[in-house]
Image (cartoon, rainbow, N blue to C red; front, side):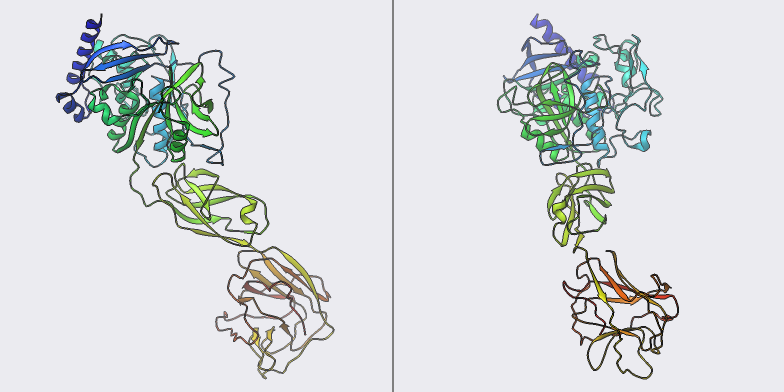
Length: 608
């Protein structure tokens, strides 16, 4: 019996050499031409606990032993596990003990491993590798689910969704020739020769579907419809890398890692890490929960294999929960690391990291809001810029904040009340995962708290002798007493009503309102204490207030000392930059002054 099996395998290997489809890498042909190990025996490694997988021990001519697992996960979820499969809502982005990536969720078609590859590939297509999917759907960006493509029926009348990134099909995404479905599919679990063989068709050229390179559902590679092969070391938890697969002459048959590597390379990308590895619950030294977390934190989904099915790992929650997309719906589910899901125990992972093209890294152009008042409540900060990816993290003074990816030009971050508990500034940056770089720093201002006071007007105005022609309206230092004065009119004339409004740029209003009940000549105001305001004139507007009001209402909106100061009373202050053509005074007119800063605590405006 063993000799017969060996003969079949030898024929299969010969077919690999003679009948590779157009586009298969020449490096594989060269490897087979070299003196590489050959399979000398295959034995069942364990009795399957369900019909969806088979594990075999493969002995090579160099004495090495590999474990070959055939996974042909069910097209529908096994009954009886509805409670375990209840959808969950993972946190968006990262929190202190959890993280998730925005990975598409697709329904089963062609094979669970190919669908999981499409989910992970779709994530990369949406995050810096746009050449993975180049079809017309969703503006050329791989959709978050596959509901938008039409369904189809196979020869048995079974209906399936379409997913061109897993398996191409005539009529989908503008295709006008046979694809993966027409050439390789008969019916789920079918072991019949592929349709292109029985019909004498020429295979389609590979290029746009993961399943082709993974050999999913291809009878030539001994895969019944829906099945994909995975290789690991026998009895060992160490990774089986793609380079080792080539050296052991089994790379052409491994779908979960090496097949995905071939796809990414066909799309123009290089591949970094590339391996299969049993998990630590199945083999000592195997892939751990900590390693899974590290992949997610670096912005890389993980292909997760259970004994009978393949899924996409998209997040985690401490101490031992992983979030998954299980190929049977568009929801997120969870399972315990090392445990079972839908009655099937965790077995292995496949890690294939396509390398993003070199970019300039993220940049920040603006923050919204760009300031807040000290002691305020927690809020959502919008960060605008460029080159953001799913997995980008907003940092507040270097510390990560929970971040939601909106698009390549916008992120949202959760800023806590503790972050704005003290007045000052914070440096906001964006870090892309892995070696994606860190942005420039944008400044967020935390303003001083709001205060309020009332200053009462004395019975008489203070009058100083000035030059006969009078000063230009505005702030001036008097030559005798060195106080700062604000003159309303250049001729020291009178106004019936006056309101002065000081606008503080970017942080509210600093309002002084005064309605003069009678005509007052040589009107001027003197300020006591260090002077922190500065500004220029703006356009006139109508005065506001109640006629006859006899005091000043001072409302201070804290901004910090934005433009410097304090300046002593003998500081030189000139109106050289004042706009021309400003008319100040007259009935029901107001002078607006753009200003920054505020008086220090305990200081007030006074009328001498």
